[in-house]
Image (cartoon, rainbow, N blue to C red):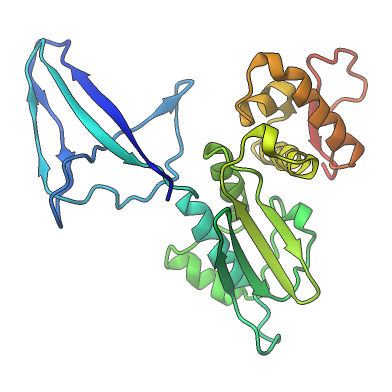
Length: 270
């Protein structure tokens, strides 16, 4: 959990009729600083990556008359890691563990700067393909967990892990394979300047994969937005793309394209 952030909520009634809205929750102890919102970006609904059980506490319904303004201080508790990413990674570890590996089990290790979730067994596909391929070691268990709503639809979990990490402005998750275990690492927030070369390449590759499975392509602009960098940092983004191409993780979508400004990229396996 990150540090609480205090913001001011201001609601003005510019219409001709009074309206009311829920302030707080409905059950458990009194809470005066919870609100429910929906959000849009470029006219499209923003995917809800938070918990649906975030409206607890007693509620009131303030009435705002025409011309009036409702104003209140709101304490926002900023989560260090997206809940959906942790849920999906734990579900994946349970589903894909190798029960033949005796003396070992799923492990969740929490550190100051990261969370590591690991399971016994090595995957049957490369970690580079986790986002677009699916092969379950325990399909009956996977089907049961999907029916219970513990994990997402088949093959969509890693997509949501990567997407939510980008929304939270976290470094790209790292999927590691050892001799007998597979690990997924979620890192706490880190500024672009703090990321090393391998972390930037991993973020570029995963962003490119995410765009591709969404039937879109990565460009310098989309990667700059992923890192939340200003326009003046465009050269830094170009360097990351060049490094990722040299690492043979991505390639030009159209090798014949002459304009460097409008180049787009796809994963190496596309």
